[in-house]
Length: 367
Image (cartoon, rainbow, N blue to C red; front, side, top):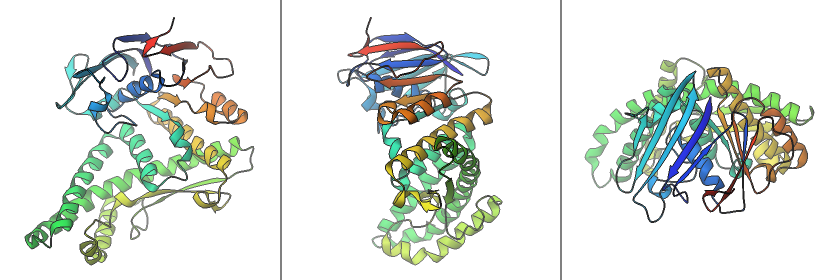
C-alpha cells in the first residue's frame, strides 16, 4: 500500500498544494503552526473520511472558502486508485474513487488503511475508556466493514433509546417501543462485542511481545477486554452474547429509567492494561505508560499487515520529540517496511533508506 501523491485545495491552511511521496519514510518538517499536522490529517482522511481532531467537515475547509478538496493517487492491492473527497459547508460531502461516487465512507477502508500515532496517544493507557474504545473502533472499522455497519447501527439505536429514557416521564407512551430498541441493541451489540473481543485477543499477544522487547524483558504487558458483566465469554457465539446483553438490560431496566440514560451495553466497554501484574492506569510510571501506548499502536500496525498482507500507512505526528533517545531508536527500528510519514520541527536522528524530506512553511512547500 502506497500513497503516491496528494493535492489539497481549500483544506485547512492549504490553498493550492501538491506533493509526491516515496514508498519508504517521508519526513514532514517545519516550524510550528505551518501545516504539518494538517497534511497528516488529510492523509488519514483517505482511510475512512474521518479526522482525528475535527468534529465536522466544515472545520477542515479553509476559513474564506466554501469548499475544500483532497485528491490522492494510491497504489493498493496491485492496483492504482484516484481518491477524491469534496467537502462543503452545510452540504454533505462527496467521495469518489476513480471518478465513481461512493455510497458510504466505509468503502475507502478497503483501499487505504492508516495507523496514526499522535502526542495524545501517549496517554492512551491513562486516558478515559472513551479514548480506548475509539482506538479499537477506528482500527476494527478499517479491517471489518461489517463491524463498521454494526457499530453505526448500535450508536443510532443508542441515541434513540437515550431520548426515550430522557423523555418517558413526559410521554409515557414512549415506553411501549423501549423493548423493541432493547432487542435491536442486543443484536447489534453482540456483533460489536464479538469483533472487539477477537481483535483484542490478537492485539494483546502482539503488544505483549513488543513491550517485552521494548523494555529488555523487564516489563510484561497484559491487555484484556472489559465488556457487559453478564457476558461470560466475549469470544463465544453471537447468539449467547445477545442473550447475555438482554439479561443485563433486564437487570438494569429500573436503574436506567431512574437515571434517564442507557447504562447497559458495549458503549461502556474498556480496554484494560496491566504491567507486571499491576493496573497500568493507577500504578505505571510515565515511561511505562508511554511504552505501553507505543506497543499498542505498533501492534495495531502489525495486525493490519497480518490480516491484509499489506502494511498500513503509518502516520507519526510529532511523537518522536516526546520520546527519549532509546524509545525513538526502538520505534524507528520497528517501523521498517511499509510507507511512513513522520512530522516534526527537525529531521529525526537516524538514516532513512529511500527517504524524502518535505519542508512546509505556511501551507506551501519550502524550496
